[in-house]
Image 1 (cartoon, rainbow, N blue to C red):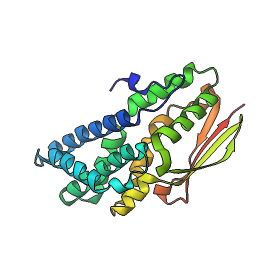
Image 2 (image 1 turned 90 degrees about the vertical axis):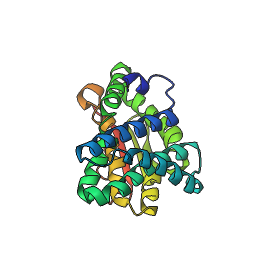
Image 3 (image 1 turned 180 degrees about the vertical axis):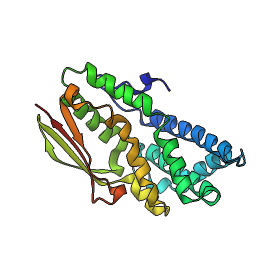
Image 4 (image 1 turned 120 degrees about the vertical axis):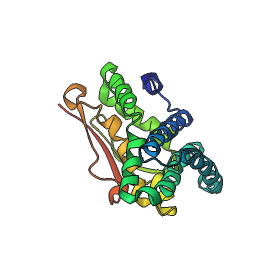
Length: 222
């Protein structure tokens, strides 16, 4: 996946469908490597993809808008892989494999795209806030609830008080996988250089890690 897929330039609008396809394809490609590493049946990947299609059909009542349709596919990809691999690898090894497959394959292009956007922006803080708001609307949508206790030229605080990912995983008895979704954000978070970009970011907890909400807090620095 080239960094151009994550071009966060002016008038950025997330491609929720394309992003979900890229994440899911990279996820199953990496899981295929795990299947080979443990000398498991090579047909497991085809089985996972088939079960994913069936699971999406069974959960269409959860699709509240277009972003939810794509977020549902990503979340259920974790669920079906977890159900198939856990009896074979055990809980700990399976979660580790799922985390690696979901977070790492697209880490470099996400970091590069975010860093390029921030480096080129006349006002990196304002650019990051604009990207955040675009993603809240077009990539997350009504499956999430956002509260904004601060939104001015000095700070942007958006608190996620309802997480669609977590709700789907809880409904499928797989709440322990929510932190995997949280860790994907580390890819773009790591692109922020407070000294260079003149703003900082804080997310001390998440719903998936036991918090009451997920705080995404951006602050200008002197």
